[in-house]
Length: 155
Image (tube, rainbow, N blue to C red; front, side, top):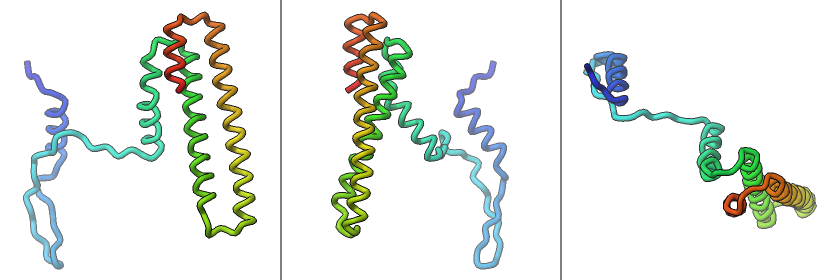
């Protein structure tokens, strides 16, 4: 029986797909160079910005996914984290806007009011989500340990 690990199989596939020689242009003269038949170990994958965001989010929520909480509580905790992240982003935008001295005062004032309204709305939504989570946990008769876990994950 032949035994190969995944890297060996991938390297073999890469080696077989590589041409034995390559053409290199050099000052309008062509020369042939023997291509390396040795592949580097591992695989390199570039993710799109959306893929990177999803990957970071999955890593961020790993502790929630691994907890012994009901699925609806896990989803509520993830939604709370999303709202917290969005709120932090808007607060950073507000700080940047306030420190921007090159913007006309009238335009700055309008943008400040709009951002403050968004922050206020997000804050209310975050509080509502937290209150709904607490009510949901009470309705489900979670154990004391589960409640403590959920509260720790919420903060």
